[in-house]
Amino acid sequence: MKSNGGFFKQAYIYAVSAIGAWILFTNLPTFRDTSHLAEFLFMFALVAIGEIAPVTIPRGSGTVSVSPPMNYTVTVLYGPEAGIWVNTLATLRKRDLSGQVPLRLVLFNRGMLAISMFMFSKAYQAVGGHFGTLGWPRGYMAFLTAAIVDTLCNALQFAIYFSLDSGMSLRGVWRLNIQWTLPSMLALYPLGILMVLVAQEGGPFLLTLFYLPLLTMKYSLNKYIELRAAYQEMAGALSNAIDARDAYTRGHSERVAEYAALLAKEMKFSEDRIELIRYVGLLHDVGKIGIRDAIMKKQGAYTYEEYEEMKTHAKIGAQMLEGMKFIGKGQDWVKYHHERWDGQGFPDGLKGEEIPIEARIIACADSFDAMTTDRPYKAKLTLAEAKEELKRCAGTQFDPAVVKAMLKVVDRMIAQGK
Ligand SMILES: [Fe+2]
Ligand SMILES: [Fe+2]
Image 1 (cartoon, rainbow, N blue to C red):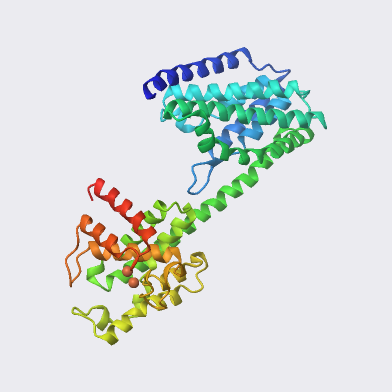
Image 2: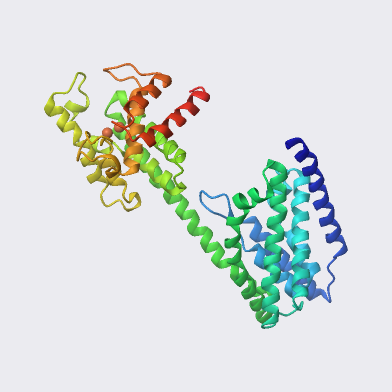
């Protein structure tokens, strides 16, 4: 399948590139006069600038850009040739020009864009749209139809490529990679109509207005990214402070955060929840700051009273995190990270699913780190031994479902030679 896919994939790439080039050079834009040309160049520059500074969505793989509606606007107001040229060439990004993307893929991408915009203009005309002005209601109908055709045409071309590349069925690719991206494209259609109307009334130079919200968005997203980094550093500093009080648990909080995040990922939690679990994992023992040195640094076994005092770190930690809005329910996870599945844990003796799932995850990550690092009272277990220990404690100390996921995480660690 893969080797056939290799041949068909190459053939497909060349065919799309060739058709795209043919469309581009049989649709050369012409201009009435120099001001017409100047307007076209201005629109070209506007789209190019929008592509230079796309807004990256944090953690997602996408970017937000006003290019698609801007390209539709060019096509409707300046004709299919101008639209095809802008859509195909003004959307080149730095990585396309700097050689980061192989040339044949750059040509292939351009080919797809030329074909889609060609289809846009054909659909627009077929439904009765006029180039130069957008009339109500027919023009609006034509615009929406054409925009849907462009989106689907683009999506289909991508889907065929992914399918040939991965050997997955076309339907599978569509469902997994394409379908969910379509609704966000729909939001751009009304924006496109608005752009046409604005340019129609006030001239194309007014289209710069649409870049203001984009820039504001970019600014606030950057602020948001900085803020997240600041939280992360703060949580990291705090966890170092906790671990520094006990030489034997150096790096404990960070490892627990890492294991908890891997577990949450294995259990198919959303990106947001995984990130929160990581934060709370970092801070799970923050309450130890409130425990006396005499107990924290004690070498031998605890007396009953000392152990009771040590146990309070879970509640103290939860109190410390009270009022930290971004942690949400995370303080409960800190409070319950020493609860056990069989109800024999502390502080409240919660049982089974009464314990928040995130606390069950952190509990498992916490114990796994304790098993696999040297402690004053016992030598560390190997990963294979830790797996046996996890299995032994599934259903008593740990949630069996969490153990099942943890075993997969450990298997991966073993495979990676850790
Ligand atoms: Fe703890
Ligand atoms: Fe811990």
